[in-house]
Image (cartoon, rainbow, N blue to C red; front, side):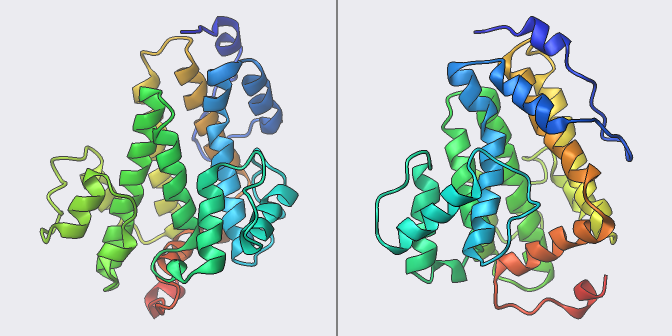
Length: 280
């Protein structure tokens, strides 16, 4: 296993504190990725691929991707993916098969009625990441899948939506959310974050709620990479936390609220959002 003593020793400290700024975050990210090679580089590129999934979802929904965080692919390749799906042509080179397959589903079928486009792509991305062969990265993606599923299940229950359709993926937590009738779906003692997430779900300020969830993710990364000295896992953790810093340094309060509004809308595109949620 490669060790990156000099690269890691030279990294700037990161903080989730409000107002924290770090200059040239894109440059830092590229320096880290270019400082490794082979399989390690492919691992460190995964967070950028998540950005591509979000951008592809926006294009499939007819939205403008200008200003969205960049990924591994430029906008023209993402648009080519959609055009190839519509024309029943082969998947463009450099595009993971799961992204092309989901684009095909979106342009050829009505499958998006049961699951939001972004949800479909993120579930595919989590599965793609969990198959990377690195135990730490696998656990990170499964943690995110479980976190998102519990979160949407709580929201679906609150607004009377179908939890079975809201939950995505097919791992143990997803299956339990779909099948259990218990108030906590039997997950309170099974998932370390369940009780904290339940408390966070009661927070009325949408921006603060979203930030608290990212703080949970931040702590997971710190705790689970603590013993991986000078390894690619430390670099992966750093890049994921760097993305959070970049996200919040450029997001205004209104932008934070849109994240939670989008969560409701993506559960079922034709469900009317309750008035109390619209007015927050």
